[in-house]
Length: 531
Image 1 (tube, helix red, strand yellow):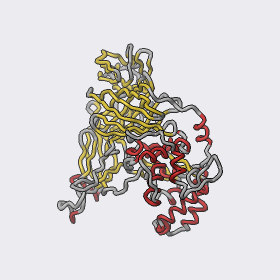
Image 2 (cartoon, helix red, strand yellow):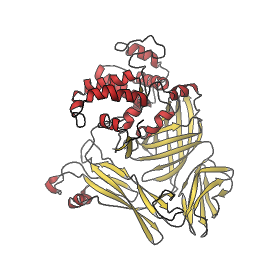
Image 3 (cartoon, helix red, strand yellow):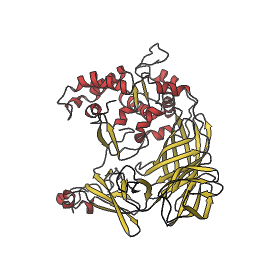
Image 4 (cartoon, one colour):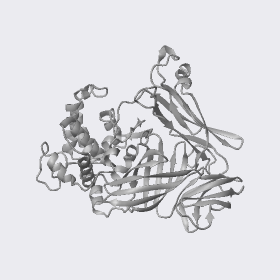
């Protein structure tokens, strides 16, 4: 692919509508998806006579489960296809397993599958000008088509959206000719249907995911958590799941639900956690030892965080992940059924073990005043951690994550809810060169912060955006203002605004600040699985 890339902000993605279809508890996957295609789709599509690509326009594409769901929705909406819920699930299953994406193909675009908000994409200029005016890079990056099918997609765009050629960045060029004869062939090379990665993935044994998993994750307003995820196979590629653990402050976490696995590694689960409906979108490693991805609220996909699970007994995380020279602090080691002495590395003494649970060990630890600044391995008995503990002398810089973000006004009696934005303060100490802000800075991890807002620029200050656009709480959760006209603002405009989110981290007598740009925008009326 062309290395000359440009930045494009993907500032928000909506909830996956297909989850309800995929995870309907009463549905069965026993139905033959190929048979459904033969019975319901061949009134428009035809047999090709090629056993490797048997159905016209269908067998020349590969997609994620979400991609195939979108295809079925389009067929139902535009072409009158009638499928039951069970038939829909069967077709998604069949196409995902036979015409899906290999792990390496989906990996660069997992952020959109996991509903990660506020991601900034690198997009090839050729696609930025022709495709990214409407779509994210992930929208076409999560598809694989033959060149003929990429060209058919261009024609479909012209049929469904005939004004495409009149849009900005299209009307001043030979849009159709470029799309058909330049962009489509490039897509066929960059996102090739006959990629060796998928053929290889089809041949290998797929990971077995039942059993007990050690989990570490993060949830806005709740903080870091650890848990034991128990997975019980109920039928082919279908599981019951149970999640039990603790948040870092000691409060309990509990949840249960059901999961499906597509393409041999794509984990999709619906759970109720602490009374809240949640979704998990994870990817299993090829060897079946790890699950990584994100868990988020079903109704508010922006409220969620990363989740990592390791099969069996393992150390999967620390909270906090750094200790200051000469200081004593409580450290929680996230991991399953950890036994034996706790070792936090040279220069760090375990004063005492405060508690042990199935999912964690809590210790009081002290870093020597002369402890070497840097990372050290952690172990509990014979179990070693992949995560490391940092010892530092002082906090040099703080970055607010995400550095750019989007929230949306809503509510106020309307049907469109507010879209919040969540923040964390990521701290660093200076590296060996002693200069903060360089490549060798020591990453200390996320730290507690005091959160505040200020105008992003002079216009925002004059419009008093800080007063009207929303508020941020002590957990770093920003809630935007109400939708609709506001008589307190100039000309009764609504509560949009441009803000800076400020994190203030205390380090002894010093306060170190970091900032993030926040745009508070109008409600979004588009709800798509992949935008």
